[in-house]
Amino acid sequence: MYGLGDVDFFDRVAPLYDLAMPPADREALADGLDHATRPIDRLIDVGGGSGRAAAALTGPEITVVDASVEMLSRARRGRGLDGLAADAGRLPFRDGGVDAVTIVDAFHHLPDHDAALAEAARVLAPGGALVVREFDPDHPLGRLLVAGEHAIGMDSRFRTPDDLAAAMDAVDLDPRIVDRGFGYTVVGVRR
Image 1 (cartoon, rainbow, N blue to C red):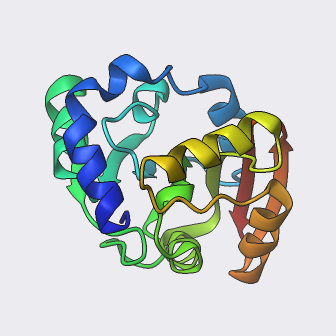
Image 2: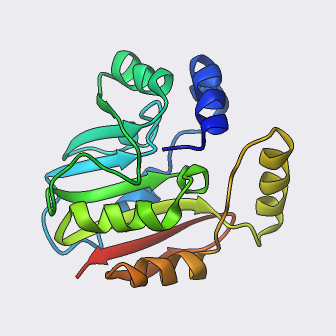
């Protein structure tokens, strides 16, 4: 799911990751999921790593999907979550098989944004929501994050909220920019 260098990085930092990262924004995720027009019984957290975002959610059956087996191990052992090692560009779920997909603070690590969006759209049932929490590269703090990740050798590619919304529209998701700032939320509802 991540470029090879990023997977190696996350495998190495997995034991310390949750100590360094703040909890996921539960309110922003809930606000995004509220855009779904169907009940959310099954959710996949793509790029979910240690389960940081999944732990902030309650209610649906959640599966954490990530390419880093060490991060998934943290989700399974540390949080008791279901985890699946897979690529965001080739999700092992049936068409229309899930009610929601989240990608929290990870979209910029995905090697093929278009494939990941197309796969999210494919696995979502009509009325289901893709909720992406990301960092705006045009925000002053976003520019620092971009520089920092590139300085340590990550293959990160960040997108603005407007660019991400346009990309969601291109894969037949109805895009909505829920909030803006350093951290922003864009939702795509399956038409």
